[in-house]
Image (cartoon, rainbow, N blue to C red; front, side):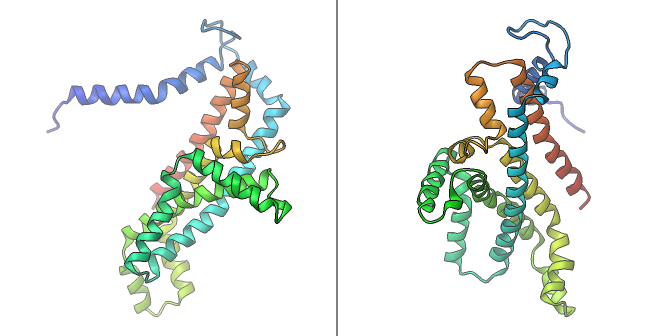
Length: 263
């Protein structure tokens, strides 16, 4: 019989309100006919119409989607390969601890430190190759740099939960290395790959600090545009744009949850 815990339930509800009340408020103001102030002037979708007619916002949205898609594909492939290599290769305990430290470092290091470090690295690389001029290339490399760690940690945790029994069974049945990877390992770690890829995609959509330090005039993303627009004053267009970004962030999470539920 379940015991009623009203205090725990109240704390849980309060936490949910803290998490989602600001997002709900932004969504409500995005359909408010008032330009300034908090007064409700009626329901309207004209701010979304103005939003999708704004050329600067459209270009920023395209840059954001290109950046998120390309960096997610690259980081998912590299992160998955790194996770498999760390889990399967016979590393010594010392090297294994070192690799764990290196992988976890980008996760815990403040974004501002990583952003400055990447900017300095690109300044040095530009002396050697012009491809590292600030723009979409530097943005993609920057995002892949911190996304790899998240993908690796998710996929590696999936591998550790599976153990080595399936590997030994496949080898006992004379499975080749490629057949073992394609028919045994890959299907089993697919939920981790999907979850890691969706996490990387979401982090790329939301990133501001690293993008701000490494973007060029032609590679402005939506978070950077919102930051510049807010300095001129918050308008209903900003509310509409924030709501669209929230939906774009939530969709991959919902898709990942639905896909991983099947496995």
